[in-house]
Length: 364
Image (tube, rainbow, N blue to C red; front, side):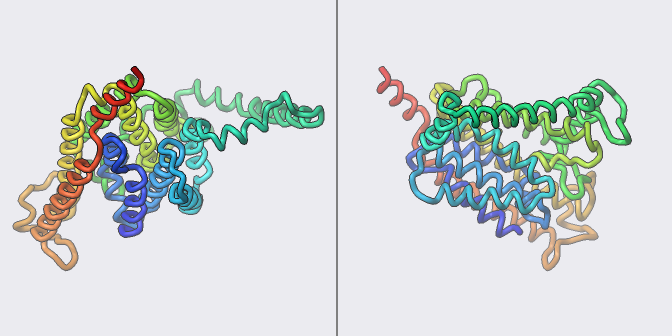
């Protein structure tokens, strides 16, 4: 599972991060991978492979509809990511629908899609086609009316409805779901820690908020739609089946929020004002938080969540075929290798301030 997820994530990274592009897509790709994402990607858990397929689908959409990729790689990536999502989740239809709606602003801007949509212009429809469309619209309205009553009832009640939950239960548990999405390892039994969760949330806000406020272009719309879906999905599940939802289910939606927020910043003047230092600070802090989460995840096995940090010296539990000290050394080697590779990638990319400056000069 770890090799499969790494291969899919690397494919997505190669589509998002291009030498002729700016540096903020690196931040979006890194931010999409929370500590919980890394954990579920290395275990036999469908949330990990779902996250990988989701990021591959998003990367293919960005490469095709934003970068103008004319080759087959972007289409192939979407052709792999979409059926993958349909195969690995039991609630596949809902997640695919959320991804489709969130990525619609990118797709609708494509010339091929616009040409196909022009065929649907009602001005050119025959009387029969307009009649069929009217009947279909009436059917949709009737179906919606049938659902309005129960939905309003669930929205207004604060208790359980027919043995299930209510929207207020889902809304009241939102913080727990977001904590699960960031880092609650195992069977949601090991929290990464309040201090670390606060730092991770701060880094996420440092990218998501500027993307919404100062971002430009289609990614802002996609970020807004996906952010609404991220916050509304737990509430909707709370209305239907309160106890059957976990925060890691939100990871495929968080992928869109993180990537689109970074792309929105990269297309704005904020990237030039912030400079490369902000990118370096965010990536460095994000990497340090990942290392800390790996150590915390390892500590919970030998001595428990509140146990001593000297678990490498004397503990009742050790990873199979190695000691805790060897595991810590492997984490250090893997972290150093990742940091070196990431620094090489960032140096190969075009500085954001140069790109924005040249664009402003050309416009003037």
